[in-house]
Length: 436
Image (tube, rainbow, N blue to C red; front, top):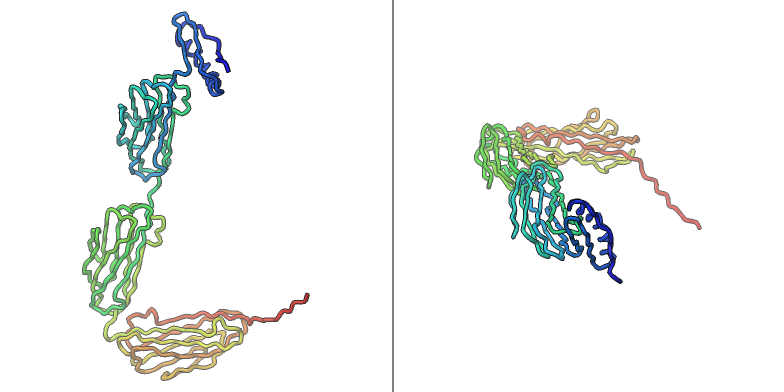
């Protein structure tokens, strides 16, 4: 294919007019070059000067930019800019400009054979020439303190004609994410139950499941009344106790687990004591339902006991009109024995009382309430069995049992038990024979 020629010249009175005319040919010339034609010259006679533009005499610059996909508020940002000259000529007087996003604080710039400076978030790097090669510039900065999307854009230009300026601008978007730290708290008490005026240890386990570290973490433990604070053992925590409250703080808790151990002396009187603790931080917690923990323990002495009752039903569910058996398990966890123990069981009003069996107990029934008593009940357990007939109606039966002892009971939480038993209709099973 022979050499092609683009004819036509502007004959203005100054070079600016000539330049404007010349630029109108760039798109046409680019089409010729893309089609495979060799480069050509456009020669234009001008009253002031004679100029020749050879479209093969150019420096095609481009820029690429990379950065993190996401960052935490106030964290370090690193942008890498890759300036390239695809030739064919050396680019003269090259200038690279990078405008940092609002809220981003400039940190520094590293570049070989570039002279760089920053003013008001605008970074400018220059060099006298860039041959057919690539050159990188690294910019460091600090992310904004508020979450959001920040976009950083850079551009490159030179004094040498660039036939393709579409790749002279590059940008990168960074998502500044809100930091989250899911803290949780668990608590263990030992021993439980505990003797009066005895050492008692609370072990608190603080866990951060992330995804980020928690900052300015505070653990608060409200000690039970009447306990005597002994001390606190914790690594990397600063702790103090005042007015029955233990406070522990630390600047940072990474995605890990940490323990705080508090020792006290149990109260001088029997009863149930409750210890409650909470964990918080300045970092937002996506699940704060697990930020509190509670432990309940009983305090006893040599003259007290812990009586409990548990009710079981058989069968459950029970069919209408079927015999139902309630088994009451009465337990004394000690250490003392009770001179007299009384168990009361209020049957569901829908059932028909059948009878009661209990060895060593004196029992009776009045208006659906079964009462049993016995003497000298030491540490151990015993059973009472009550029979009844289920109603013919579909209902839920509610049975309530209670134990009362003559000795001081240091943990009355388990003195009552309530059991619900559904009444159902019998299933009717009929064989099915298939006939083809």
